[in-house]
Length: 173
Image (cartoon, rainbow, N blue to C red; front, side, top):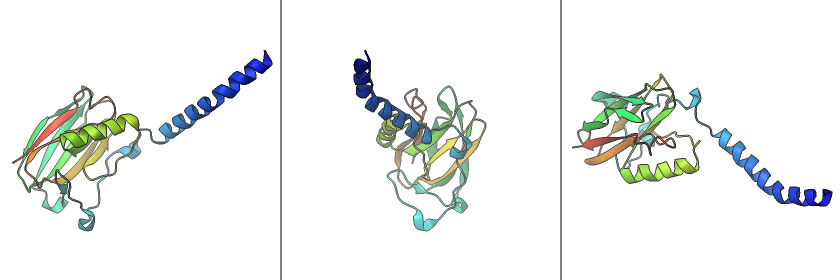
């Protein structure tokens, strides 16, 4: 009986160790605490990068504020925004729910790819000017200049939220 038990343990040990390592790594990246809330970014024009959907905006050049609510019904309100090409706006997202949400700007394809990555690595942190985490009852902001005309999106890419339809549209005219 003892030799059979030893063989079983020796076969299971690598799997148990791998599982423990994965759980430890996942907890190191876990969402859900105040550290993930969107903090005001210090604008540095030398670090601004163009994307396919615009670029980080200079807060001094924001022409208007657009307020968006996030809810545990996996919806944004409003879910459709229209801006002018070249316009710099301040997006203020308020989490009216009881769970962590995020707002990520991008193209439909980019958001789908990012959502897939989030499913594989659910605790990954974001520190890009077009992304923010917002804890329940809190607000965050993105200052963004929409430099290209077209249809873009914003979404919550926390696993399950995007799939449940937590997506909004940005039309840039």
